[in-house]
Image 1 (tube, rainbow, N blue to C red):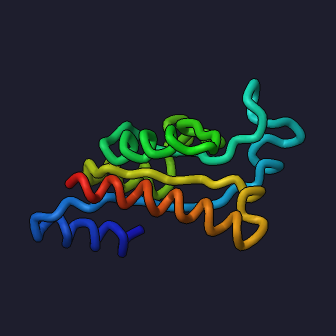
Image 2: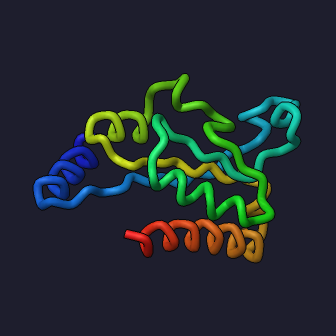
Length: 131
């Protein structure tokens, strides 16, 4: 965390405001136990953040055009947990920050991995093309 913070501070000192993004996969069994996301079935993608941002809004808009299910602060709620890289660095540096959690069931084979990574890449690219 110290190295990440130092890098963020260096970029800010150069007049740049970085966006913090982490991408993880999650196992529904660990996130939900023997149940699924209440009232929705398994969740494909979770968008985790401590506070809303323009980056979140852009990724959210891109995912709305996809066939994948997604939700904010699921399968984990960073506003409740209040720890981790996103919370720590977003708060300290007032950054746009987001963790994308991808259901491990969507990553079982190469074609699925390619589809999901393409969607995530296009969503990120769309955000940066508007800057």
